Image (cartoon, rainbow, N blue to C red):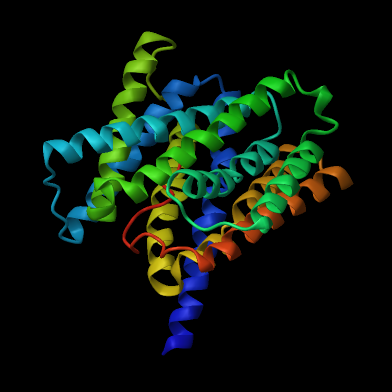
Length: 307
């Protein structure tokens, strides 16, 4: 029985991280079609919130929260929205595989913050992992001079590392950690949709979607790397724990790089391959070191509310 649960957990974790890595597959065609980033993110968050609400209702969740919880979730939504926007904007300047791999550095930032400010145990391996990750990102960015503005692209992607780490820590250490995971995800997605509605109306506008290819990409963007990735992440943590789930999260940059190379014809040479391996290795080192730190957050806390 334990072996069956382990196999199911591994499958859930792989599905979660692999689907999250599909964000470029559906968002980049929308950008190329002329749809502005704020509009894309508004539709994505709105559709995801509707789907998440349907799932929560079908499973009998209670949506009632206190005003204090409301404020906390609104604050977390700002970090989540900033992460989604930064990652999408980075696609304009650097390859999507590089952007997603840089974003995957967030476990390092989480570990550093938890060690410095929350007195969690650390080790020399953390320092080694940080150095390895920096070298890996440098190799990934090497040779991207042909991009329109690689410096700006890396800045956008790098900012998502901080905002997503703040989101993760906020979920772990705030009142949100005591709420149902589906309810938290619903409110975060709903607040994020409201944020991007205001942002879109004040900048590019929302626009009316007329074509089926655009609706298809928006629906798949909401369903696969957002809703499905969230739900399978929670199931994986319950079956095999947060450590193993995080290790299998390395499918995220691998999937994004594969999509970028195969579907969008992005560069992938020895430097990029070495950089990808180093980043994934650094994150795995950090995750393995957390086995000797205080327990992970409860299994029903959604630690990846999909950009």
